[in-house]
Image (cartoon, rainbow, N blue to C red; front, side, top):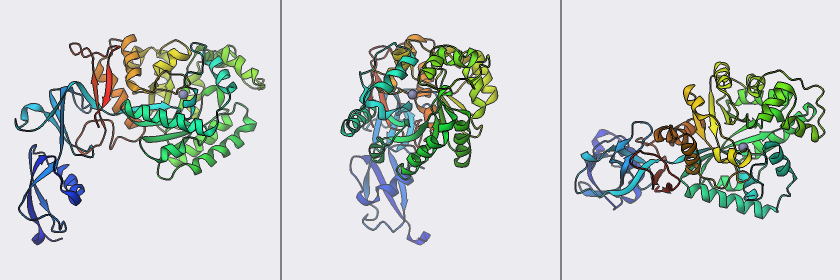
Length: 450
Ligand SMILES: [Zn+2]
């Protein structure tokens, strides 16, 4: 279209809709800042719009006591302006608003949709079946011993769990898969998923078969959705298997995830070749003759087997020490530390030393783990547990872990994680919190507004 064909139209805010031109208008609005009126230049290609008419633009304006854009400082009485598809047109102080503008007010705070950085959706059928506080070695024993229900039951539990995450304001998930039972649900794209196809084999002789099976699952995964092949845990992956994962990850510029230091038994295994995890591995008939203690905690034994070029998620970190954190940060440039506090309480009844991660300036994210080891799939519930045990951590920091950092790790940050113009991050209302001190309480709830 040449300049000669350009027309000018005038658009006002409200609920009416310019039917077949909304996408075009939206793309223009992203680059405009005027709040209640937009002078928009159209090409004459949009045939159904009469010239020089007044139009009403689909917009929703949401305000609350505080807006937490996460990309910038919290805003008292700010307003988020969105189109009907959840695209953010602007985030600004309420003061600039026209008194006649229709604005939804909510009591509480508004933040972007949550990112669940660690889940095992395929284990949802375990809801309520596994005993609490048994310790990781017994938990693993029990999870392997329980019978799997028929596929229809598994698939229904997956659909229900996904719906629960949606209702709890979660917009993206880093999900571990050992099989393909979640694929059908993920294909519907109700949530954004990155699937980590997980491998484990302590016995080096099994590495090739295990990795080949992962490659089949990788190939079978729905087209266009994000995926990578990832190790389960330091104690369940042989050096050979680590090598295969690393080679494949480097070729594919993949992101990686690994369960890290979930219990003292994991450190004991590597330090002294003793403890609960050592005994559990032996009980499965593995030959431990070629396994040698190094006197060092788990993380120092495996982290350098993982590629520096891959963003790497360390999940749980329940018994990670300040020395472990410093060592790890000096030896890997792209670490994200994931907390799943309710799963830690469920299995080990112990929580990480959050202050140590803060002191070391780590990048932290939050996950729910699965229904095998949790009472809910709610990032807010995880944040409430952290806030209860580490009340010194400010709400803004907790929300940054639960939104921006997770989106960055999973490569969803162009659309998710912060309230910024041009993104579609979902909008959560957090209410019934201690507004005076801006703290989460046991009564705090989340409602998904968009
Ligand atoms: Zn897990």
